[in-house]
Length: 206
Image (tube, rainbow, N blue to C red; front, side, top):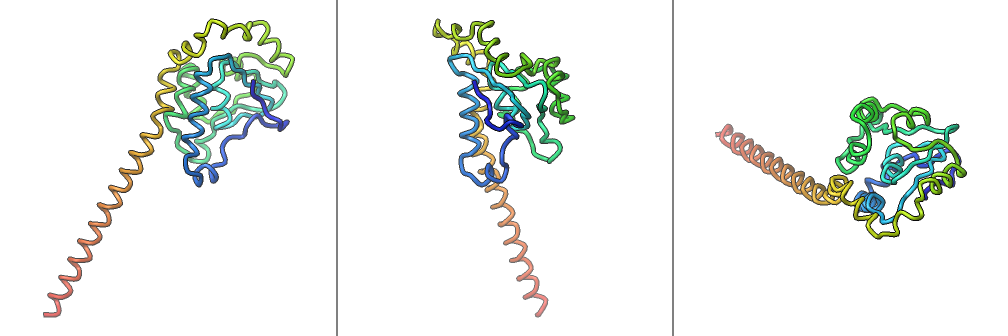
């Protein structure tokens, strides 16, 4: 069970400046997501407050979610501040939400109240800590991993999600290589232009 010690927030998402300036940040984050998605025991996210952007992504990689009905929204608000969403970020929502809910979440950056989140099956239960314990007891979650295949079943259920998370590093390497290639082409083009201008200037003096 995960939750937050901050009353108002489960998680307000990533610190983008820190993420962009820290080598390996996203690779580490995606390994955490993958670990949760394939964890060999039931996982529950107790959303005690807002869960935005990366915070909501974290919650969605749990098996169950309990949301405080009196405080907070869930939202992917990347549309509002112009941040692209990668396959590794989106695939868990595609796997768990209906197409309509998925569209509203991504393309409208809608802030879902607890009631709306329950209606859209983004969360399983509304409530606080007592409801978390009730969920665990009623669904017999402490017994679900005894057969030893719980994690294996999750790996199969979410194989595309896990593949997207695992493939992130390869895409980063490719993107960096493509960027270097484009930079090299641009530099060579600039050098040719400068050489041509120098040659033309020399001839014009004659």
